[in-house]
Length: 94
Image 1 (cartoon, rainbow, N blue to C red):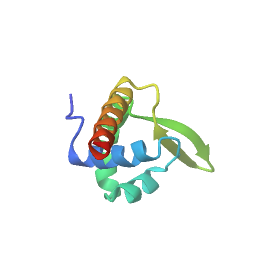
Image 2 (image 1 turned 180 degrees about the vertical axis):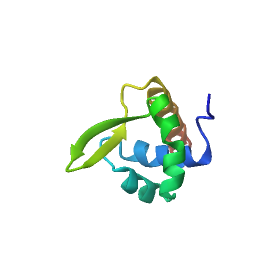
Image 3 (image 1 turned 120 degrees about the horizontal axis):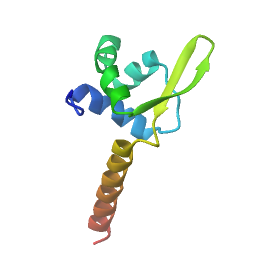
Image 4 (image 1 turned 60 degrees about the horizontal axis):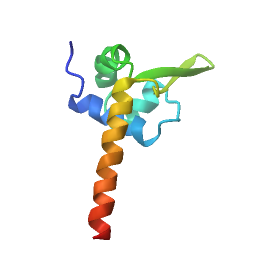
């Protein structure tokens, strides 16, 4: 199995987690993540194999992708992020 969370995938997931309902073309996703398109394409199979992304719709000839809300991995990461935010809020309020 490929390493799931390499630096490229972390950058892609940061964008997707920050904007879970936005549909991105592969080009837009690479730009938003600050990575080259070749880096995105090199990681794309891992994103699909682990069901991190799903097709949102086609716009003209371009397929748009978004975060997959049905993914166990995505949901697990979401819970970790929520717990981290809660801890940070408690630190601020203390």
